[in-house]
Length: 226
Figure 1 (cartoon, rainbow, N blue to C red):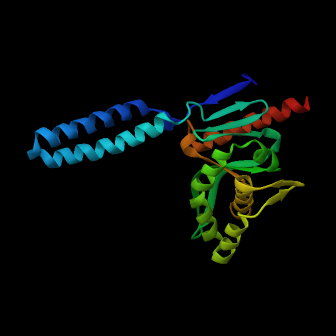
Figure 2 (figure 1 turned 90 degrees about the horizontal axis):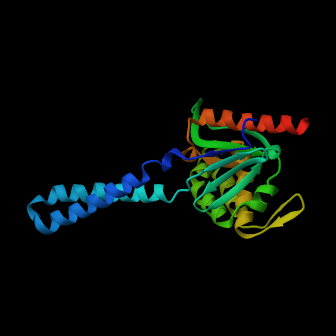
Figure 3 (figure 1 turned 120 degrees about the vertical axis):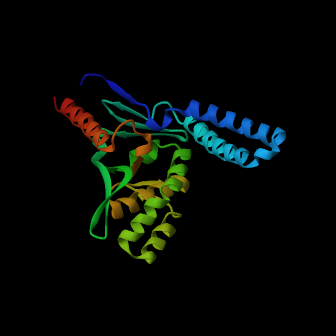
């Protein structure tokens, strides 16, 4: 392996400061128009609306971590503004772009899926804030799983189970970790993966990123066999 680690900076992070500055200037300009040039109300409103959107997008970009992934010989670490999680290469059974079958057509979802051999190591290291955030962000995935199953009663059962303690390989989890563990198991049953990484955190095409992860995993396994 050429390097011992590789840092990935998300594409979404780019232009954050520019958008923030443009948004702030647009808002100030709109206020000046409202106060001093009341005859230009419509252009002022347009400037205010565009400035608000640019400012919100810019601030959200600025607060994203500068590094979204760190690949090492041991595994891959995912960083989010809410926290981080580490997945060891030897604990990954499969990883790929997430696809679902809708109306006899394969639809690619904006996620990289990671199927784990054991979910305990992830539950033991994921930050509570990140687990909570992912539970919220993954609601569309849960609805997608429901459309695949076409059984709303099963979905209700899954949702009800999330509020119960989780026992995995003799380890007992409660609260947010139990909810996240249940969600991982549900999505794995329905969509084939435990962990879902948003493509917004990537710096390249999702297929290229999957190939990169597979390359690092293969090289790590080769090093362990030597």
